[in-house]
Structures are given as C-alpha cells and as structure tokens.
Picture 1 (cartoon, rainbow, N blue to C red):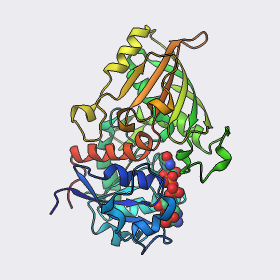
Picture 2 (picture 1 turned 180 degrees about the vertical axis):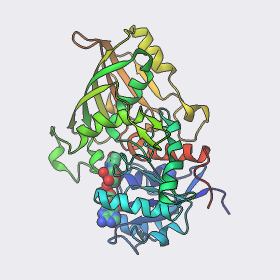
Picture 3 (picture 1 turned 90 degrees about the vertical axis):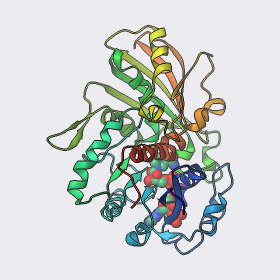
Length: 363
Ligand SMILES: NC(=O)c1ccc[n+]([C@@H]2O[C@H](COP(=O)([O-])OP(=O)(O)OC[C@H]3O[C@@H](n4cnc5c(N)ncnc54)[C@H](OP(=O)(O)O)[C@@H]3O)[C@@H](O)[C@H]2O)c1
C-alpha cells in the first residue's frame, strides 16, 4: 500500500479542481483518491463528469479517469476515505463556509482555494514564503470547532500574488503607500476563450469583489497572531489602493505597481532584496516550492505573459521595469500564474507546509 496521504478534491471537476488533479499527478506525498462535485456530476466517472470541459494543456491523468465522483454534500461519505481535502467548489459564500467547517468537524483538514473563510479570525490565510507562522492559529480554531485534527486553512486571492511577495521582500525599506493595477487572465473566472468569446480582443474594467480583496488581503498576510484572542490581526502600516481589469489573456495576472517607502532604497538594494528573498518552503525543500521564488528581469519588455508565466512551473513571480517614479518613489511590473501559484499550486504548497509542520498526518 502507498505511504502517500490520501486526498480528496472538492469541486474536482471545475477549472481549479482540474488544476489540482494535474498538479497532484505523481506528487511525492499526496495521492488523489476521492473526487467530489455537484449532484450533477455525482455517480459518474470523473472522465464522464468532466466530458469536454477538460481545460488543462496536459491530458487527464489515467489514475483519476475511472474514479466515481461523489456529491460534495455527502460529507461523511467523502471524508471517511481521505486524510485531508482540497476545496475548490463554487457555491455561495455561506454554503462554502458551512461545508468546509463540516469537513473539518469530521477530523478532515481542509486546504481551501475559496474566499469564504479568508476573514474568519482563527483561519490562517497563508503564502508559505511570507507568513508560515500563521498556521499556529489552527490550535485556537480546533478548540472552537472541538476537533483534534480537523481545521480549515486557506490561501489568498490570485490577484495579490504578483505584488504582495515583492512588497514583502522590500519590507526593510518600509513600503507604506501602494497603488496597483492588475491585468487579470480569464482563467481566473474559471473560463477559456471558448466559454467566453466576448473577451476576445476586449478589456473589461470590472471584476466583482476583486479590488477589495486586492487591497485588504495583503494586510492580513502581513498581520500577527493575537495570542490572547487566538486570532490574526491584520497589519495597519501600509495602504493599498487597486484597480482590477480583465484582459484577453488565458493564464497570468500582471500587476503595474507604484510604491512609496519610508526608507529610501537604491535600485541595487531593491533588486538584491528580490533575488535573495526566500522562505521556509525553500529551506524545507517542499516538493512544490520554487527554487527561486522571485526572478528580476532587466529587459525593458519583460515580464511578458507568453514568455514568463510558467517561470518555476508557474510557482514563481517575475518582476521587471523597476524604476524611479516622479510622484511615487519606485514602480515595477509583476507577473504570476493565477491558477498555479494563485490557486491550486498555492494551496498544494500550503498543504506541503502543513504536512511538514505536523498539522496534516495520516488518519
Ligand atoms: N479560477 C481561478 O483561478 C480561481 C482562483 C481563486 C479562487 N477561485 C475560486 O475557486 C472556486 C472554483 O473556481 P473554478 O474557477 O474552478 O469554478 P468552476 O470551474 O465553475 O468549478 C466549480 C466546481 O464547483 C462545483 N459546484 C458548482 N456548484 C455546486 C453546488 N451547488 N454544489 C456542489 N458543487 C458545486 C462544480 O461541480 P460540477 O462540475 O458538478 O458542476 C465544479 O466542480 C470558486 O469559488 C472561485 O471563486 C478560482
């Protein structure tokens, strides 16, 4: 029998679910044994349930094709055969909150891609290179839920991955005012050009709820645990304002960012801080950790989505055009892969961190 941890994918038939399935093919620690989706897919094999909706560049892994899909709502049935689950279901926020806690209460850890629990005070929202210590708040959450090993942990929104890691690497220069515009790919809405032909040759200046997430979520990631209350307190020393725009790109969110610093850095200091930035995933050599989280590009026309989105298998961030600004102090362009680092890949790295920290074990 395999020593790998058995994992279930909630919402496994969707865009993010498919990315989980692809990333976990041949994973050294985790093996997909259960897939769950809506009642529409339940009872069908994974291959039948997905049908012509397979959206990945690589073929559907053979190992999952014949798995019979469960109904996400049959919590006990899904939870009994897995060590933990990834969640990528698309339901209402309240339904997601309830169902993720229901899984946690069956003593099944949930690593979620959804936004429903991102502001639950005792749920850690983690980018493993930035705030791995926030996982400690799980102890307080388990007390609230009355569990011994079940909990919910989440990763942040895809939009912030192109600039929050950069600002973190520059922390010593104390960034305090940030203006960001994100140019976001259509896969972030679970779509391809086939499903969303209106996006061909188009730009839509609105993504529901995205600007608030882009402005607020970095503050929670830079926050600290209040030990007395058992919750994460967001940072309050940085202000971010953001515009989020949908552009005709399949994969890859670009951000154009202006920053003011309390301590003035030189360009060399900014570049070195990015090149040297690494965190616990690199130290622990977690299987999905990029070797170099952030690459700095010197060419004037980089990073480009077509050339750079797959940097470090989609787990790294590419930064270019770092230059002084006439109103703000410095400006730059960041790029990250929204369904890899920004969604399923970011969640897989969180699960690897949780395993390394002892929070996810065999049942
Ligand atoms: N796409 C991204 O890059 C991205 C990034 C960050 C966060 N997210 C979030 O991740 C979640 C999934 O996104 P997605 O793009 O993968 O969506 P999607 O392609 O529409 O997939 C949705 C999944 O949820 C299931 N589902 C839908 N309604 C359900 C119901 N009433 N009960 C149970 N299961 C249901 C679907 O099952 P069926 O196939 O059976 O319908 C499918 O497996 C969303 O909450 C989204 O906001 C997405």
